[in-house]
Length: 265
Image (cartoon, rainbow, N blue to C red; front, top):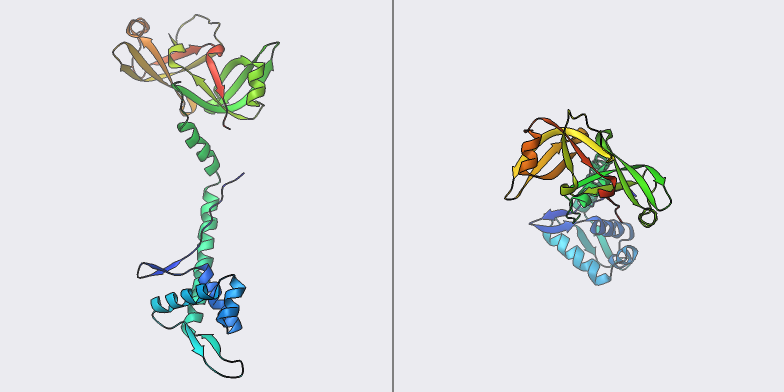
């Protein structure tokens, strides 16, 4: 489903609505039929509603729009003035310009649906500090559990271990958009130059962009590839042991079982 901008033009005089699509159509039908009652019926308005619209437009317009013709073979009727015809022509010209403007806007919002999904992610209520939007790249099913690989921007990957029931309940499939949630206390930090190997499936490296000291713990923010950021909460003692500062490389490690997968309804 794609998003499309639509709109209508209304002309205002003295800060009051003067002419819109419905009233212009009414004027056109009056010009066609020479009768307010027939014009009202043609546009789906009541006779009184049509007269109210005409009176309002006549009162706001700098010149008369409708003149009443009495007597004659047809028993009289109503006619448009030259000013009314000019108004109709100008309104349709405005409409055409407006439509071109809307078409230009629609060309610029091809990615609006992606933006809307992004805004929904921002409003997601969760205690997890780390939220990563990505695409399901692979699902490896076991007897009880499954490993779901989520590919993020920057060509990063996060692996989550969840139950087969969760895979089915979420309706996960390759190519689907999903969100990986990782709580910051479950992230372990190691120096980028470490020679150790770890059993944890997720190993993301970047640079320390911020170190925020709290009353008890310290929050470390890491800039990853593709504009992703990851937060880890560690003790002050752990930070001292790491010996890293802002701007220095570092790696974040967390288990696949620590990753929660979420999808939008």
